[in-house]
Length: 243
Length: 243
DNA sequence: AACGCCGTTTGACCTGAGTCAAGGTGGCCT
DNA sequence: AGGCCACCTTGACTCAGGTCAAACGGCGTT
Image 1 (tube, chains in turn green, yellow, red, brown):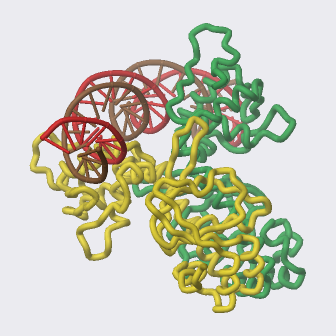
Image 2: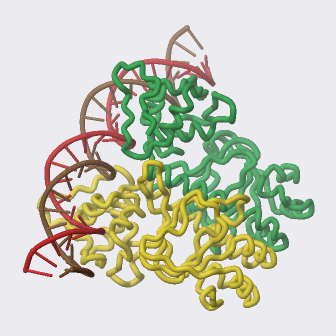
Image 3: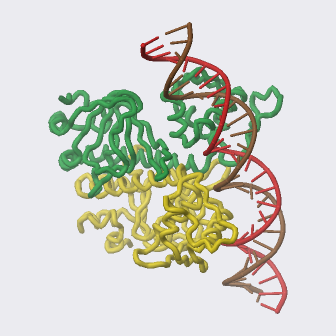
């Protein structure tokens, strides 16, 4: 069965009392997905939300013609689809599938909502979460509408860079990351190459080392249509000018 | 001063009790913006949120180079920036400016939050709101990443089309709408022209008449890279094939 | 009526990024 | 080992949509 210790790993749930957790645990079920296995599809009625314990879940949109776009990668400790619980006849707005063998806990939304009624504090935690996520989404839109592919990749690298370190792990297959950043795999590869040739980064599989963080930050700052040419044969450590 | 009747026009606030509304009114202030006037900037500390009474407010992101992208147009009865109230040191993630002379009410976030503590119901209303907005944002991202400019315009038209009617008003300057849809004004104009030449719509200033809704729906469905050629001189009412 | 101001339209051109089609490269299985 | 398969890379080409610049049109002002 579901352990309340496991539930506590969820940021969203960690604020609940022992008693509440027990109650949640009663209406929760553990599940396990194989690599690539689909959890739910866009449009399915949403009766539960999920907490990831191990692995990674890919949330993505499907267009009618079948192209897909990764909206988010959910990692252990995070919950997803819990926002739907407050809509009347909720349906999942995305598809969810495991990126690798994954363990998660499914929590009954209806019951959870009714439990929330006794706990304004938890409501506030949730409100804070949603708020944060909303902010992130705005950033995402900004990213898509205002920045080039190169800039988006640079931003991602900087965001993922652990403070103080110069090296980071992409944490997923490059193709998946590409879709997360709304870029085709081919383009992602070319961007990576460009950054390498500029002397900004170094890549070893999924290990990326930032060689020139200032330059990378400059690239990340760039909006649309800012040229970023690789000058023919200059020594070119920092081809981008300070504005 | 602020009338509680006015407060009631806000979907978010309409669920509150008389008593609560009175309290909100005490910490609220009315304000009035001229056309184009800035209400707050991206990055400003967020101490209050707003309810629009009359007019329109444009929420937009600014990139460092100065290009802007409209995230949302807020119309009377809607509140905005209320999600920030649950973050610890919140700052507005967007700029807000009036599109036309606008009246609104500013509500103290701190006080409102503490009032919410006595009203789980209101929390739920808010949660529902945020949830809905989150869903909308996902749709927006989907839109940007998976659809062409033409398809986005078509979607907007269909969305704004009052049920049963064949005509709608764009409701804002075309340039503003263009930015809302992440398209340059020039491109918007061309898309419009294309749709007219296809015989799908008719335009008279900001009045748009849908002549062939099925065709428009087909166009709206199209994702990226689906060609949509205007055939040279066919009579061409429906150049898009049923899949 | 002539003027200027804005928002929109049009045209010519350019470029970022997608598409299609080959090649690499590395892991995993007999 | 060899071979298969999935992923990533590279190259050549195309195209949607952005850019720049010029013309158009409506409207309020003097």
